[in-house]
Length: 83
Image (cartoon, rainbow, N blue to C red; front, top):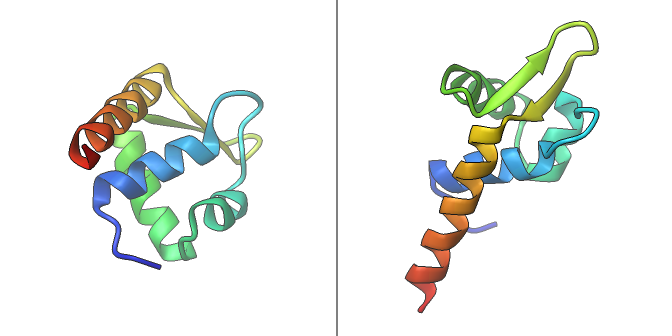
C-alpha cells in the first residue's frame, strides 16, 4: 500500500466509523488497513480534537459532526490536488 499522510489516515478512520450505531476498534483496523497500535494512537488524537467519539459502554467509535466536516474538506482538498 502506498504511503498515506496523517490526514488521509484520519479521513479513512472517520469514513470507516461513519454515523449510526458505532463501530468497534477491530472493524476500524480492517476498514482502514491499520494495525492495533495505529488505531489506538490515531483514535486518541481524533477524540482529543473532537472528530471522533468513543462510547465506553459499547466500546464503539462514531464520527462527530466536526469529523464529517473534516472528511468533506479533506475530499475537496484531494479533488483540487488531483486536478
